[in-house]
Image (cartoon, rainbow, N blue to C red):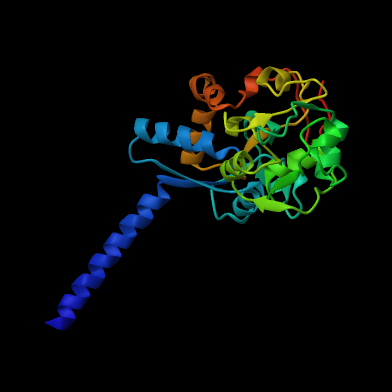
Amino acid sequence: MKKRIFLTLALGACVLLTGCAKWIDRGESITAVGSSALQPLVETVAEEYQTKFPGKFINVQGGGSGTGLSQVQSGAVEIGNSDLFAEEKSGIDAAKLIDHKVAAVGITPIVNKKVGVTDLTMAQLRGIFLGEIKNWKEVGGADQAIVILNRAAGSGTRGTFEKWVLDGKTAVRAQEQDSSGMVRQIVADTPGAVSYVAFSYVSKDVATLKIDGVTPTDENVTTNDWKIWAYEHMYTKGKPDALTQDFLNYVLSADVQEEIVGKLGYIPVSKMQVERDWQGNLID
């Protein structure tokens, strides 16, 4: 009797597992991992997509652009979210990945609101993050030590900032944080603090800085007057499966680009008046 019960349970488990396998094979669940700068957009769109199409699930996780690219390259996830071109990341074979640009994002330096500075030259900003300028009074601010906060290595936001502000040099050794939200909170709470975040993470708790008199706005990004910006990429390994492609089409649809992308602090790709390649060159 016990053998019959065991056999019945085993067969039942097999049927259930087979059913699960078929459910997975239908592509009803995919995972997107990577850029924390892009994460709020993907999460918001995923929630709306799942509401409109019940039974289809989009799992969204952070971890940074480096994680997104490595995970999608290995086949561990369907989508790798990145602030960087795959060509910019060592260890990534860009030829095996397909780039889906879904938005552009401006990146701005942020400071504690009491530092007494509103405008820096690019050279001054570079000097701060290279450790050459150590007190805000050196750039016209309060007599207060500068406290630098960096994003973690592998962060696309950090990669973009170092590329356009530091000419590819590495920022001075300092405290690092994985999360853009945590960076903003620490800058708001720490006297003398400075860091950088995507426009979408700016809040009234911190102050942004003009660079060479240019304000960090979407409009200035679209014309490349504000140089510190990047595309937001959703990479796939080769041709996406049906659900992945359907979700990417949804992200790029006119309604989502107009109604969600802009409202969350990103810039729809259709509004960009310039185009840059992975090396940063403007494309005619």
